[in-house]
Image (tube, rainbow, N blue to C red):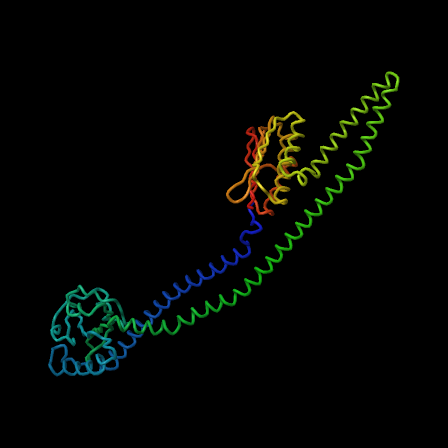
Length: 436
């Protein structure tokens, strides 16, 4: 059973929550930005590939296919020259040297035209997908495998994207038109799209965060004010409780205790001159009255320990253990003589020690109880330990331990930590630490 709360000079939980909110918000923006940049980059690349497909289709069907003749299949110089002129003027003349190579294949795997003359007439096996594309009208794009023999002249050009689609000669013979785009073309087109949309996305995220920050700050301030008000009300309630306890103790001491003391003296005086057996009865009544006065005075110490405010925590704890010793318990008290505590901390330590000792006396069947108060690196620590029957702190829910659960809340509100270590048959140790 533990309780943690901020101390008077400790960090504000609301401020910590605000810092965590800002940190999580910034991390979220950064993560979304990274993912968004990656998605925009991919979208830019895909758009650039679609652009390359469109340009290839336009060039193939609008410029190259009308220039084809069946003489190209027989490698006639005039047919080659006609196609080469169109490709040099309308395809390879694209800005930024975007196209690195152009090839035209027949269905047998022979290159009937290329802007690299050494490839014309060479025959290479076609892949299943390329053979299938002869019978379709689709445009296909893929990264070039420069390790293939037909690509040996492109190996020094870097990463290439090959785009191909079927075209036909005037007689209907199918050919495969293929262009190789440099990676710079894809990067340039993708980068242009990224530069258009990524700043908008990142700006929108930053604007959203800036809009949320004032709202979060306003909510944090409201929570902080509510918490401060709660603490002020709690302090007032504790102060009012102390005043009321002091009033009750004073009324009992000046009223009932004094009246019973007078009755005790009267009974003792009457017993001196009373005949037997009335003298014995009067002495017994006087003794019982004095015993009742002693119990009332013990109760007064519990309600409002005068020694706590007059002589300090050590004297008040000594009185507390004195009452336990009178009930037959072996007690020990160890208070660091050089320790100086604030009145609020002394009151908290006494109330926790009072409740722990009361449990040891009334409920635990303990034979001994010890109280230790010592300084720590950051404040002070109170330890109350008994050898009683113990209990399960998690399962404890009866009235026997209700006071300890209440004191846990008091310790938490005072900026301290209350810990109860106990087990059935193993006694109990109550520890509270407070920063000073």
